[in-house]
Length: 257
Image (cartoon, rainbow, N blue to C red; front, top):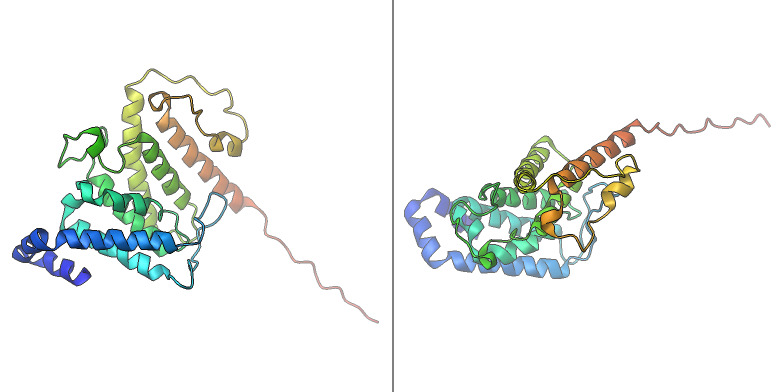
């Protein structure tokens, strides 16, 4: 599939033929492989208290299969940018969401690059696709729910504390968070000011880990405030970890007996 997409990217007439005759099969194959990968992937996600590492997911299903499948989807997005807004790719985005905190950093990088393509296709304020601005609620893409947008932002923020974070990878993450932040800001600007929290001076780990009450509607949540608090918390946590003194080994005990 990758070779077909590479050839389609170079030749306009062949690209048109692939779009008309072969593209749907490529997307179905990518979706099927990601579904199979999700079912066979047994390791836990990198969570808030762990450093992102390079771990083998399982011995029976190597991470390389997942990585190259996502890379193929990236090629498809570059060659056919409209795929980001196609309803056929919505199941793929749903599966990619589960790989944003995959234990192996290469899979996380490829997944985040794909999400960057998705976010760049959206209008930051309305979060509707620029190519197809008129959508019904059921056709507004993978991130039609603001709660899902928050979940994606949270996973992207956690990636920033990875031990394997490169300058290029961090730039991609920050760009994604910037687009999401613009959307959160547009939501907040259309609402009345939020009351200040009485727990602003409390322990960060408690303040940032508290979820919104289930009785609060999405329209009443200060998402841009949450994003700033989340990033600030992770930044202070990282600075605190760097200031910890190194453990000095005890000198050897000499015995003259």
